[in-house]
Image 1 (cartoon, rainbow, N blue to C red):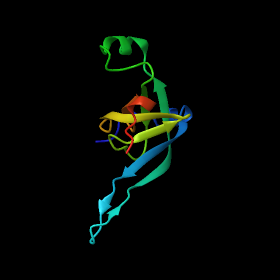
Image 2: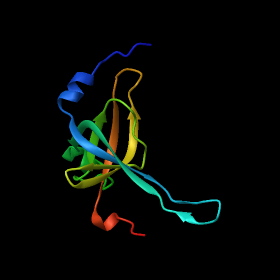
Image 3: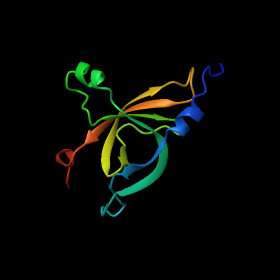
Length: 120
């Protein structure tokens, strides 16, 4: 079934550059020695949109005004990965695939504060 709407040009017009942080967890090698995990940054583009105040109010506290919605074309993001934009960190919390009728995907990005960070 062909896609009914092509939003690629519109999304790319309003897209910004950001990085996707992917973490490969550490593991143990054949000798039982721990091998540290690796963090990689992958550049990407998409429309990062603030959440409307009405949606924040109606969410009952689950969504905050620092959270963002990401509209993106291209390779999908992994749930739980981290988006870095203008020095702020956002965790990919949910994903909506619009593939049946559009050429884009939307994500809910939760703001990650310094207090939410887990330190080893």
